[in-house]
Image 1: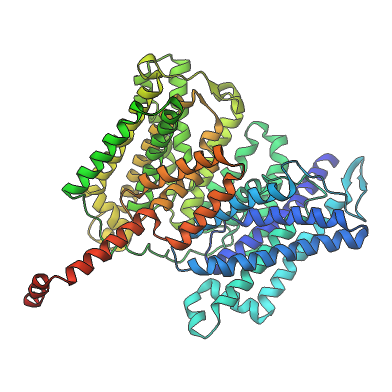
Image 2: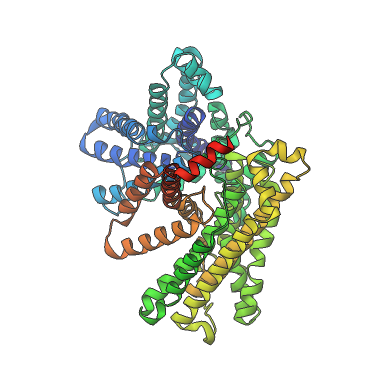
Length: 629
């Protein structure tokens, strides 16, 4: 019994740090509506700066002063980020804000390595809390007891701040109705800046307080951000009390899951998150989400099929790409095959996001299921490659059909987070079911047959499948089903009034996107000759989001350009510099600020303005317009 009590107290200590970070993210989202992917980066910066300060200054004052000073320094950095970058994109769609904060995360990952080096850093023990307390033969670190007390204290301070101060009242009002707060004369810019500073301070403080417990390393941000998203969604976006309750719940599940359910311990948290979202979509203490902002431009510039000249240009580009094996080496062809595969992956997510209006944060699950489907058929059943490529993606179809049934019942951020939960469940199964999937050792030896084994032949295969996938999805976009899907995206009530079953339409689109992603995963398994759980990890899902947003979510084929640019740039930077993430992150931030519609969307806007300008200069057209009027 004493052991279980100690385990429970250890979970509470972890909950304190998790609550600090989650409360900061919840506050920022509640007011600014920004899904701040860089929140984990601020947490990591807090830990690194606190390590430096506590090592430089000795004594209790030096240690605790360094902890607080580190959080304040990072808060100042957060204010600069908000003023320089985020203020420029507050009126952009929420996904572009996610893309900008992801670019910041990439930059910070390389910056901390550049300043502090790649090795793990071990901080010193906290003065005054170096010992342990004996509890019926079990030792409880006194620092854990300090964190257990700190959590409720911070919760109380935040409650008083938001309930008893004018600033807190304004923040709560902005959470409910930002437009009304602005109409009453409140300076929204400085309100948002102050909220962002408080949120970043809490994240940095949570990271700084971890240095006596864990090593400081450059992968801290991605490890914490997933758990923080889970906590915030379970508790309810914008709810401080919800963040506290959910942090305790998640930490205790992590503490006891490894003891009671060792084989599914990683899955437990995401199972709970999925159940909460299905039963109560806005979280335990949250409120129903306000209608999401529509992506601008969709109704002003309706999509149209390609003209004859555009079709000829696309065919010419495909012919040029097909000629690559005649003048490129094997390495270039392998890179070309990988780019073609990620074009398939990106267009599958783009179809779901642009046509269906459904932003999935876990699309890599179906990519990975397709890869595992091929591996099972090739290694266990010994089937030919063409059969494996035909049947392997069906595993992605099945996963999309099951998960999509529950996911399409939600919308907005909650839909995105439920897809993330399902993706992490699938990843956890692949990671822990070693007897079937090989765990982190993966499944090796999934090689293509002779007819597709050479780099040139496999490149042609990948290119052909990519062209076919893009063509089929374009046909679907301009089919009656595509118009019904767009109607559901743009006006759910009107589409329902004319007899469109919106949920069924969205579920079908989810299945189509998952199947195409599974096809990309199947080809990827043969390209790499192996399958690992990382093939369905969160980083791959984020890569797909970046490709789509980089190309332009408002366009029909922007994902093709986005995938080519992002993947080619990523591969090239890795081979040219040790700071590829820093350069790539800066490029992503620049694209978001300078070209918020993406590469293709910006080009289309420029061409559209040029057409309008030339049309307005035409005397014949002007006379026709006057006659019509």
